[in-house]
Structures are given as C-alpha cells and as structure tokens.
Image (cartoon, rainbow, N blue to C red; front, side):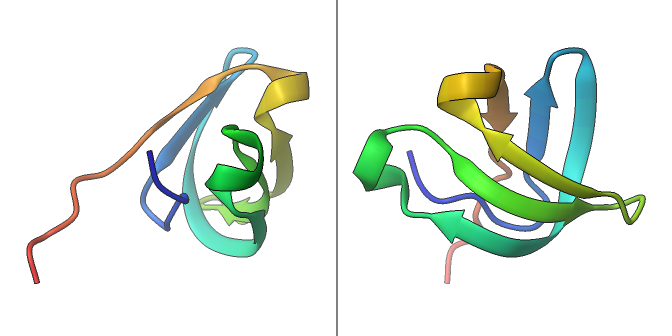
Length: 65
C-alpha cells in the first residue's frame, strides 16, 4: 500500500469519486487505513476516514521513473 495520489479512485458507501487534489492526508503507515481530505474531479470537497466510513481505494498505476 501507499499514500493516495491524484487520479486514485475512492469507493465509499455507494459513492465513487476520483481524487483531483489532496488537501490533507495522514500517512498510510500510521493506521494502515486512509485518512484524507480532498477535492474530487467534480470540485466537491470530501473527507474520508476509511476505518470509520468503510470503503476502499483503487490505486492508479505508477509510471516507472
């Protein structure tokens, strides 16, 4: 697992949204769950705490550098 990045997709309680901009994110290692605030591609500000809200994230492929 890794921290989330723009382009990753969040699935939670029937809502599916793509991250456009991350405003705040707690490192994955601290809880082994995602805690973040972000704007999606529709401009909606969202807060997602995976341990409380449930759901999962689809991580986009990272291009080799």
